[in-house]
Image (tube, rainbow over all chains, first blue to last red; front, side):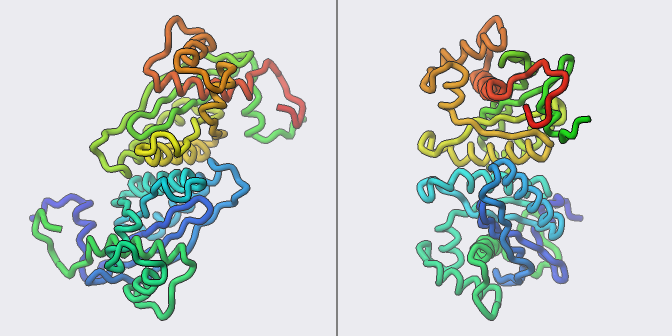
Length: 187
Length: 187
């Protein structure tokens, strides 16, 4: 008899069961998202990709509240097992970095509140995992995302492709497996 | 007959009616809060002051979710008309600034979702409004907070006193008035 907790069970992918990962490229003006269905060997299937935008002229608290509502809708619709978010660093884009960090805070808190696992990956980590090179450029990344998702062309818009890379990074660390049952303590 | 909207009416303080302002000194490890009841002439009465803490060893998304829950409880208990939050700048405390910005994002989004007004004030603005000097030191600020709240001693802990200063800054801009009715278009 398994004594796994609900969250541990959720992490174990089974044949015929859909496990969704929500990848997020956080932002206040544009927040890219990608819902990826886990497939074996670190691959995935794009289920939904898009960008949540908020009006630049609107006050920041209201923009954050809009983002919160949109994210709650995404979480309710797809019920992702995990939400993977690109980590913010302060040294780049200083002028917009506070807004991006505030947006990522809202996203991470909502993800946990929805019952999902939530995790942040740094840009260089995502590049290293997806393209095998922490300094990979945008083109290399888009090519890898296209390949891993088995798409005919580069996913657009760029924010959504970036979000897909974050979700695929999560899947690389937590691949879907064909286990019918998982030994206790193993993931 | 008044055609004021609900939110405009909420901003108009009336005799016998309690209007609460929630001031927040945002943080992930320690988040100071102060619930201040509006009193005439920019003064206020301290209703509740404290600090929301989250365990440093816990992962950031879970800490943000804890903060979210605690804030929702504060908002539900006091139903503040406004939530005033100290604005984050990136040049100071770079190592903790992302976490502070993420925390402030959660707070601002929850504030709006609760139906409150939400606003950010910069540290120098708060100092200028409360102590008449944008470079006022901690001691001057604590003295002014103590005076404006008519307290016998300096409010503690320091994070809660800082949060009270943010709430009092809001009240300085939006003073409680003894209006029984407010002409349309005036606040």
